[in-house]
Length: 215
Image 1 (cartoon, rainbow, N blue to C red):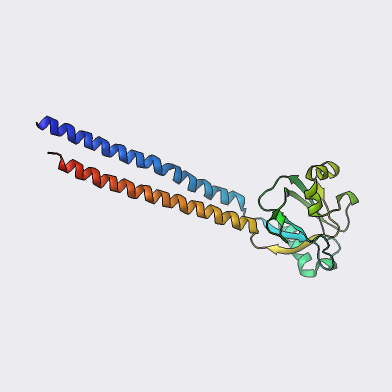
Image 2: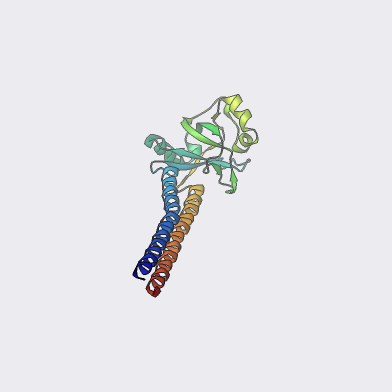
């Protein structure tokens, strides 16, 4: 009789251990998800980068579009801020010359219409110029209409004559949205961890009651 009771207790203890191990397996993906999201936010928002809106200053504005220019070199950032402070029309070297690549990066978009993202983005800032070759002149919507054609004709260079930096973006809107979404997913992951932990504790209590009831 004593041997049978000991066997029942060992079975109950084994079930309890199995439930605890299962709860650890359930929590692990959530922890990994939260860590991955945190890493994605950090890599997506480098602290040294400052973003500017490039558009047509008044009295221009016929195309009513814009694109986002990321700058990380302190001299380039200072030059962009100088253009904004002086007024674009009062600075000779104001045309943004940059290299672009196909594909959306989640940041470059038409800030005149925030839900319109561009299927291209700036990869390298080449400088401010007073004039560029005519082949580099255009506007963001025109590039968007045939990104492959623009890349083939210009080698991926933009230098729109009537466009310049018009404002500095403290935090680019797409990045803010990404942070919001990632933060929400992280909260969901944490709640999933808490729910799993509560269920695990409930199973423990139930198992203990069962073990005590064994005659």
